[in-house]
Length: 192
View (tube, rainbow, N blue to C red):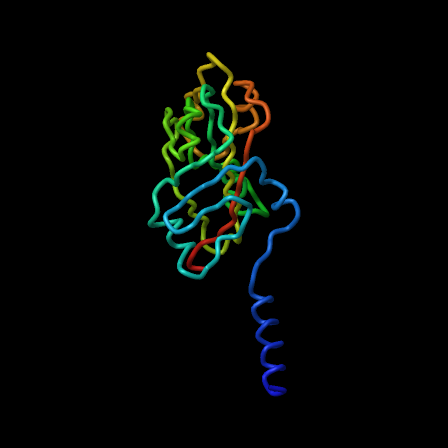
């Protein structure tokens, strides 16, 4: 048993050294109870996508748009869902931020409570595909309550490119206010 103790301490050190953790800023982003559900991965808090089980590869190349579940959705309200990468092309130089990965408006609250997206897609889902050797990227999902009788749309300029989206201007243009719920995950290129 005494010979096993150094091995266990060494193993715990190695496991702890290889496991990535979120910083306080990244952890504090998540609030409100939004769930993003991929086939083998349920994201209900801020996290780093693990390399094991090929999750990074699956989220980038295999899995389609996730289910979105929000238990606190108000049945008669409509919502706006935005998925963005604020770190494009890399977190240290986000010259293409905010990269718009998905934008859906007019989402029925009743459907959100069931984990369904019934609304109008303004930008089709595009999976997380961070460039090789660009480090971890944040993929942020933000859910806003859509003001009643306020049609939400993209300008022609916004439609022409997903990158360098002035997300704050979009939020202000439609008086969306603060998101009612947010969640994010971090991942990097699966070949890294």
